[in-house]
Image 1 (cartoon, rainbow, N blue to C red):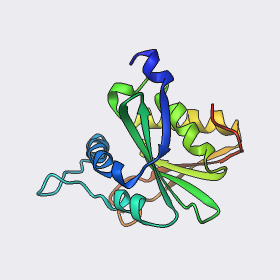
Image 2: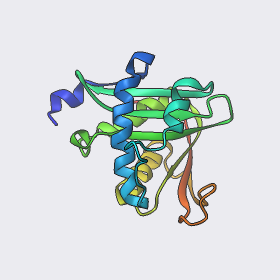
Image 3: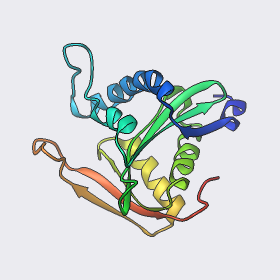
Image 4: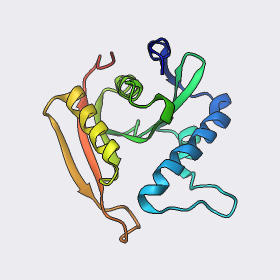
Length: 174
């Protein structure tokens, strides 16, 4: 990815007009994750989409889109906006924009919009996610973050997810 596109990174709340494009990104996101747990799409080649639907319809949720110039490169869904702890429910950057700093810059912008307590879950066998989320927690809260294994609700057959918790102060965006 060129430095010009990276310098043009914007993160903004997703509008209803963005939903069709976010739905296409959702398929890429779920496809990426399907390899970690052996999840297969349904008969119509669809993946579960409750979080996608909630992000655009439920109070207490906020969807965001990421652009590098004119290119839509990712999304983030935040939930828990009406409670004491926000959850970065879903975060995705297309492969062509990964490893260029887009993810870190984008997540910092999302976190900065909602200062306070945060939690993020990821699978322990996703080495890239482990490294990325530990780096995020360290950069936004220093050593004041926690890591905990929690069972996946309703899925005793799966290994626990890793949850990290940290606080975000006002002004954490770059």
